[in-house]
Length: 197
Image (cartoon, rainbow, N blue to C red; front, side, top):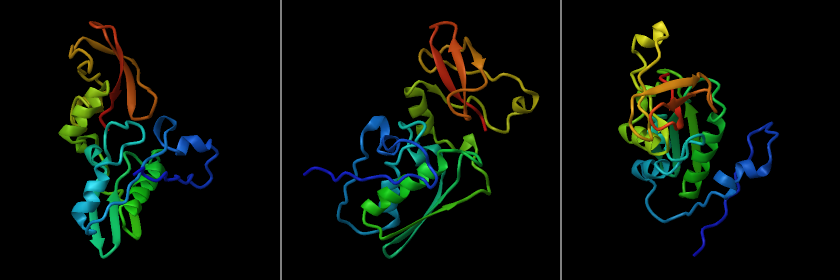
């Protein structure tokens, strides 16, 4: 049986092509409603399939942005923290959570934003870091509380391609605000580095 095509709504005021919101790489998101009790565990299992829009290989729980889940009958409330205030992916994360949980059978889906305590790159799980490296993105090299961030010292970053520590930053600004551009002087490959935030 073919999974139904699920149309993702645009965020209010969005002036972007429809295909941007039709799924990654132009493919529609496939959602499949399956029977089963509407429990916290079911909601958590659904959330474990929702990818970060900017790093699709990393699921939202791996990123550490899911703060909690409550289920009351067929209603579910998800508490989520943005990676930083004003992150442009926050609206899309909320939409993806709503559509996937709705498809799983929850009649009412609420996504509450949690701003305190603020999300930190320390919240990325070990599995999230592994998935980042497998996708060619170097995960944060240190804890966000490391004093090197206060002094502006460049972190020691391992190349996600070859593991070499002979790396250097080429730009403090990458494709997104949370990443910087680096390159490895051993294998000569460029890569993104997810900043300590």
